[in-house]
Image 1 (cartoon, helix red, strand yellow):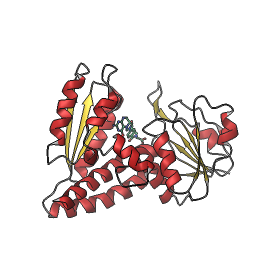
Image 2: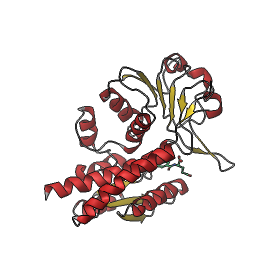
Image 3: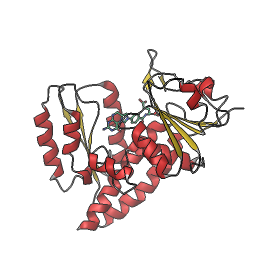
Image 4: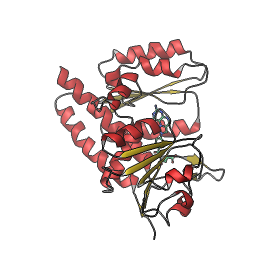
Amino acid sequence: MTAIIIDGKAIAEQVILKVKDRVETLKQSGITPGLTVVLVGDDPASQTYVGSKEKTSKRLGMDSTVLTRPSTVTGQELLELIENLNNDESVHGILIQLPLPGHIDENKVLQAIHPDKDVDGFHPLNVGKLLLNQHGFIPCTPFGVIQLLDYAAIPIEGKHAVIVGRSNIVGKPMGQLLLNRHATVTYTHSRTEDLASYTKQADILIVATGQPLMITAEHVKPGAAVIDVGIHRNSDGRLSGDVDFHSVKSVAGAITPVPGGVGPMTIAMLMENTCLSAERMAQKK
Ligand SMILES: Nc1nc(=O)c2c([nH]1)NC[C@@H]1CN(c3ccc(C(=O)N[C@@H](CCC(=O)O)C(=O)O)cc3)C=[N+]21
């Protein structure tokens, strides 16, 4: 058997086209959705991601601003910057590109973003709303994974979803989203004993560990849907994920590639969240 390859790039494009219509409607009533990304330091990977966020938002007709600060910026300076963005009516979405330099308290910075502009869904209020299945902002990467599964017509309800990795930005919210969609959810992580005994039970296997190529055919149940959230640049410049694609694709029923899987969806969902934020603010007026 060989797996269906889930084309994240094509699905992201479909999501983006729908957002484009909503942006046009907003613009007809005089509102242009605005996204501001704050980029600290000069990490090349971060620059690439921020660049594609900017490109996509401009293509949609949104206002896009990137504010760069040196890695020597203080936490206080960032808090003041965020306060200004919170009070700026033309800004509907604020994204602080992670990771931040070690001397800055990341939690403090993320909590300073007004929850109504928190298009990453990282503020504690939005984290809590996700737990309660209420409407805040859903973190872009796990939100994108749900969209991928839906577009690929992979059933979620009643299925066993196993998540490898428990980060605040992917693993934890991913489990909640799948639970809200009536999956049976198992969380596994770096201290799980006999990892394969769990992953082999998954109908849907979500891998977000940050460990290159750690999931192989031996971890996967025949026919399972395997979603690879990892992204690593090899020494030869090529990208790969947390899943050994070539080994797993002969066992899985469906699999996401890297690049062209989850990554483009993360950006598409950021566009959707920014548009949603502008729509909500327009409603309040
Ligand atoms: N506050 C915050 N929010 C984020 O959403 C956030 C972040 N910080 N920090 C870093 C991670 C990483 N991330 C990616 C976005 C797009 C691709 C993406 O488009 N990847 C392409 C390839 C891009 C390339 O060629 O390098 C693909 O997989 O096909 C990847 C990774 C967002 N992140």
